[in-house]
Amino acid sequence: MHDEQKTNEPTRRQMLGLVAGAALAAPLLGATEALAAPADEKKKAPPPKGAAGGGTKMRPYELPPLPYAKNALGGYLSAEILELHHGKHHAGYVKGLNDTLAQLQEAQKKGDFSKIKPLERALAFHGSGHVLHTLYWNSMSPKGGGNPTGALKSAIETSFGSVDACRKQLAAAAKAGEASAWGVLAWEPLGNRLVTLAAENHQNQGFQGSVPLLVIDVWEHAYYLKYKADRGSYVDKFFDVANWDFAAQRLAQAQQAPLFG
Ligand code: FE
Image (cartoon, rainbow, N blue to C red; front, side):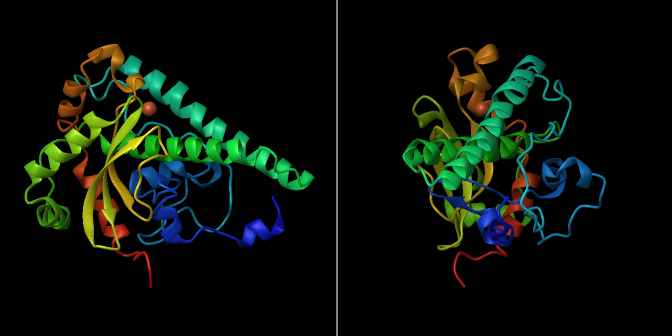
């Protein structure tokens, strides 16, 4: 790593944000934060709230383990789906992200930016894919479902009118994504509101500066082995395992990081 890169650490706000229309990084709170930490840091106590983002040292990206057993989501997603999705697809994005950064570093060393456009596209694609999948595993829980409470419930009611209306809008956004897409519930700090997004691929149709709280992967690899072409049922049943506690935790931290000022 270059020395100047070591001092150019991402701020907490940058770690929270959807940048360039995609989630390039995210606060990795609680379980997620521990999962995302390098192996030599996993045994340490988790950082205090507000210090999320992984400290100050730049490091390679790693595939976090699933936060539950592969068969833990039972009737919603099979162990086979989770094994392939996590072990092949998510792992592929992590590798792609690290490989792309290595290529960018090589281009910088050579002063040859003739491939900068595809490399930047690959960085956005793989980086956003890694972040969104890390969020996705934690957006579901064997103990999930039910309804949000507390500040998240209040924010949902302010932004959408009701929890049910939020669920319907998020489901509609997820179902509307063309081909490979995501439904995203995000906090938009400029207007202090929650929004839904229908992100395509991983990196498109984001809202810069917004913070993803809860995400639904609607790429076919996420559901096809169980639901075949019935994306609608897969999306609707997501709410049986939705991890509102995770979303609430992320909202609390996101609200500590205004976009400006
Ligand atoms: Fe996926």
